[in-house]
Length: 286
Image (cartoon, rainbow, N blue to C red; front, side, top):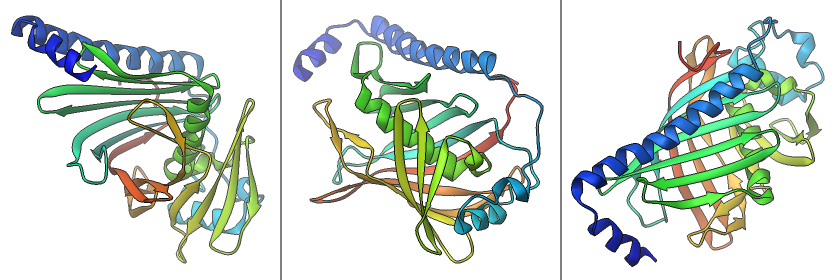
């Protein structure tokens, strides 16, 4: 199949190929834009309320300490967030990294996440779109406009993306951890177990904190890894984070990794560098 695709690419006149590369990638961008705009229409920013100490009293002690450390108490409760990353992505442990950048929007009234990544390899552009909305997830990886390398839409992917939504909540929108869909289980002075239920899906993770109150690792057994053949493989997923910096009045981790902890060994498939974060954005375009 890969050889056939290469023959197809080799046989296309260069002007047509350039046209296809541009407009194929533009189509994924347009899909991302329309999905985000739909969320803004259905989940506009409402009257903002401050997060108070009384709002967090029901949370486990290390989570309360975390929220106080990052400085969200006394700030507006979070209704949505826009996050921009630069990344280094790895296909396998021996591969050279693929440099990429991404933009994502999360909405919390009705949990939604739309993540759009741009990358290229050997001059060929790749576009990745993860979408989670209305308790359903889809994933599209497009190589130029010539073919979709991955096009997933199933229950296993939805479970995996539900965990990703919870991960974003814990790492980048801690003020939203008072959400009624989140529950807790005490797990010692420096860790706690968190549960997130959205519709029929219920997922969990263990949060690890350090002595000063920083969240330093998120670990879950509910996520699946995409394999080369397009299948999903259940594996422990870990996202260690560090380098907290104050952005828009909140301390946020600016570096993180995404790791699959396979029985045969750990595989760090992504390194993420936070470039910008904004809360309670009013629209896709300012």
